Length: 125
Image (cartoon, rainbow, N blue to C red; front, side, top):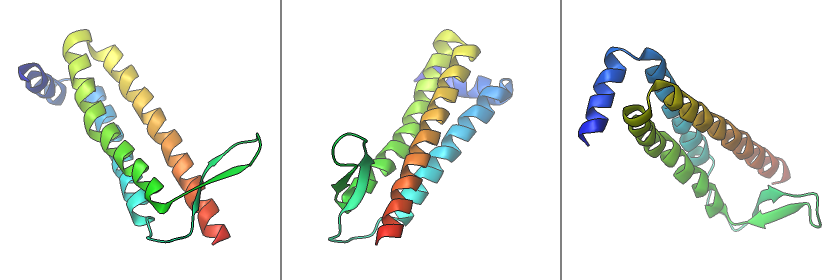
């Protein structure tokens, strides 16, 4: 815990690139959470959750499936930033930035997937 607090102080005082990357990760996670919560609607209609070119093209799921994106946004926003702080205290700045950029890439892929699911479901309903 002391390592994390010391890492936060060091990042705020001197490593502004890491701070900007962490804030970008947090904002992307907040965007995923807010988009998914804004589009969750209680319904008996199934939503299309996955696509494959093998067999059936679309797989149906219940509306609760969109809560997976809420959980993923929370994990990306909070837990990945805590992991980044731990990496920063143990391994340094470069590996931390690489980890955060990878997390932002995961958030981007999640946002694209979420928007596709929302778009497909809005068109078909």
